Image 1 (cartoon, rainbow, N blue to C red):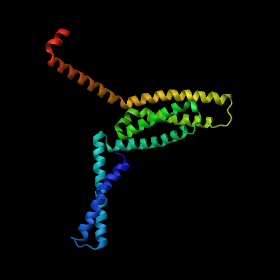
Image 2: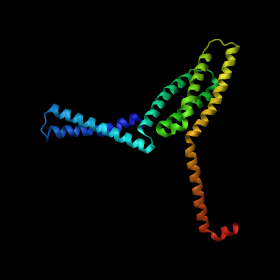
Image 3: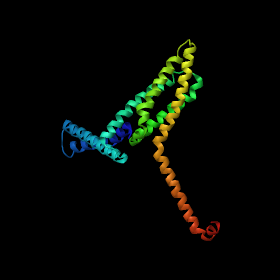
Image 4: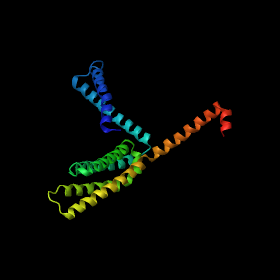
Length: 218
């Protein structure tokens, strides 16, 4: 779950509990102001903490991963986020107009993979090549490309390097598309299975509705 959204949801419950606890402590229980405030704040923090545990446990159970796995995945996702920020910065400092579409495709696919694995951590295992190899290559290449393209004067060697880097980035874009396909491969298999089931159900309904006609057609 998104950490900001999770915090807001916990606060949405904890704040009213804190206020209610203060009112109960101050009036029916006849506590003075500061003891009532202390009890209310303690209750609010406790509720916040309990909800965090419950929500986190529910999230892990839903995605069928352990706490240890999630810590490992989250650490790598946070590191990848920093790399993607570097990539974003690199891509938008390149002045080469001819490669705009290529750069936008790179960024779009990269962010898509990261967003999907953040939302569903178990997908991380299907994108390990992306996180441990391909993303690093893209960041390094775009940094090189950005540096070369920012030079005021370019000789023939620099021009050739830019062409080669652009070609390599184009190849890496295809590799990223394959990474994305791996991440969503289970969804595609599930969809194909559901389509086959739906077709089978429709055929059975047709056979039941028009038995004589279907027999002659066969």
